Image (tube, rainbow over all chains, first blue to last red; front, side):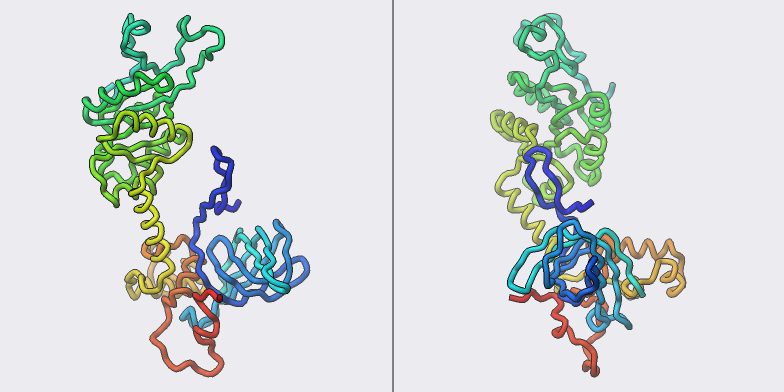
Length: 113
Length: 279
């Protein structure tokens, strides 16, 4: 369950309780949806979710897989680091004719050597 | 029991009719309380007073005594006494002398763990920024001065019992400053903690996807030692898991060697726009 947003029992209003720091890291990622694999670019990433630009609206609640490639040049490692994440779409917001911002949570991930 | 006293045990024979109000830990069952239209179960705010100075306990109890909706259910003069009182008496508010938990960083989480429904209000004798921010960070609902006026104390207890947080303007600024400082420590490349070569080496292994066992084998130590190093690294960097550690390294370029001329085909930092928000 996403811990970043919880219901306040008293006010019944939504309060934000993010437990991960969002890093404003822009990198290319591959998004696997039920319609196949497509390229996207992150806007920010945390250990519990990511925001990325995409070509179309993704339905909230739908499952996705994200493959991040952290470049060795920036990371300082001998090789690029691949991270495979499984998660869910939280919301999609249209920001232009061909630009959609998609927020997702990461339910699990695996760092691949 | 040493350390705390239950006000329920202090009933006086004529207390129902005298000027001394009742501070009971049990629902009142007398004929006055069970009259039609009045619920048998009292809905008042149940308060535990924890203060090492008897004079404060006596004075504060008198302040609450004239409020119909407040009951002091127990008093404690030290920390063990407070723990015992919490276990025995369900409470809504614990009014706690800050001196009682001074130097005990885990006292607040411990109290909240033992009495998750109780809301903690801490009385402090001086405004210490670090102490007050730490109290709010650990879960207290209000921090008040020991010289607070009775009216303000009553208002504070009611607000907190209603689920609100009691915080003065100065403390709001301190808490926000602390929040910003914490965030900037994690995202500002200039504020990087010092890491030993071994810690950097372990971080390098983690970011390459190696497991603890593999890292231990590579650097010639045990898996437990690697776990200890990782815990220390997480604490230093303020991260909570391997992915966050990798993102931290990516953002801060923690593992990057001093710049050499980029070879052909290698991406530069500018090319992948790390850490930049486009307009």
